[in-house]
Length: 586
Image 1 (cartoon, helix red, strand yellow):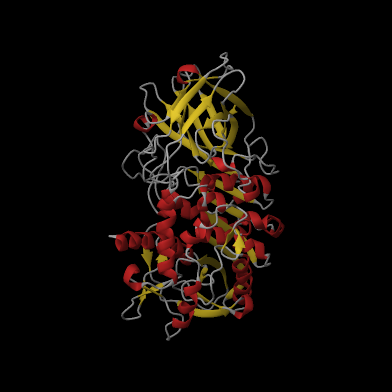
Image 2 (image 1 turned 135 degrees about the horizontal axis):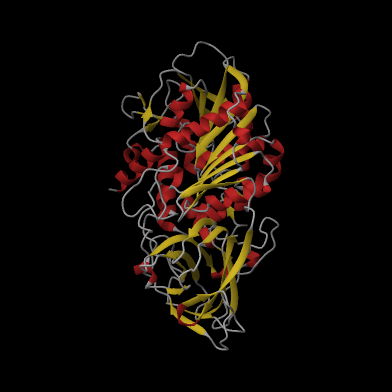
């Protein structure tokens, strides 16, 4: 059963955008990179290729650049529909096993390491000096390879003309390694097991073998992978953002670390992402605001990779086709590459800077700046009887007691599990979950309310335990009383100290560093303030806004504390106010 589960993951990773094929026009190479380490690369040519010079599109992956039958050594179908689409439109594709994976040599000293970034320069430089290259390259990908597409810009190689980072990791610590500072074994453990099987070429578990580069099977390369860290073990031992994950700190393992180099590259980006995909939306908006590269952003209402619709106003317990459709997503990507790599005017300069989906309205909006014009921040105060009001509370001693219920869950098809290939389902009716949490709800709105941006929660609270976590869910409640998930935020309480960060204007920032972490003081009132994941939603007239507070999400995050049941006191009075701050567009 476990093996079947991981075969599904392998299928998902290798067939993004649905369907797969095997091109016959493919050559394989070993290219020396940093310190002479040889990296495996497959180069695919269009079916009608006739020795002409063409641009090359890269995908740097840790999920095998290709597969073969373990018994016969015969190559297996491994090109996605997107790959074939680019080949059919006269691009050469170069798929690379990054250091320490697949058929490549080397040991992985972490994910997205500076060494891996520097490796990419050597690969690009080798390719542009081949007789079939016209000297122009781009990169694309989803998830891991979406991140490596952006990281390619950090090499500042002059041949790079455009990249498409899809559903990529911007701050690796906060998403997906340790969301809210917590450990989420439910999705990290399967991923850890899966990539270990890949690195060790575990044929019995994967049902296939890594594609060889030459006639000889890469036994020596795979032997070197035995020293790769086990991801789950490394994450468990690395609780802070300044902890080392392998040989590098988390702070060195993401595009954020390369802000200066990526911005200086001035490489145009088409950024594809989803409001409900882990923390990729926040990363997308931070990049848009603080990286100077020319950017076009499409913020979708989909699962990870744009595979299916995720809006809780459209989706219940059955899979719904994505918006934009798969073919629309492909055309968008092709037009972007054609414009910036081939120099064919596809009108890309006229695209809005950001096109983003608006829940509730269930349609797209667009803007050339972020936040959009007219944004104001309005506070809604927690009040007696579970009310949420724009007026400040009058009580002197108002407080609500909540005994943490560890059975609370956002289910097994949520914004975090979609990173492992799952569709997002069952967020359209949160009433049962709400009954297990502490909730505060506004009166039905007299007028529609447009929320667009990053909500913030500020709670004056005390706890009976030094350890604990807190989750806050923002929900829409329709006139029938049915509540729908909009977004969420959370925090491991030891990380409650606020820090300064120029990228977070008016938004609370937590460093997640060891020096800023401390246990809660038992039964002492403290202000705990944190951000929720950004969103855009039209709350319709007659609907209400709700926040639901819990101390657990049992199907996603590890239990904190491991022993005992904390009681949280949420204070809502004149002296100790608690409030939700919403970004409203007037």
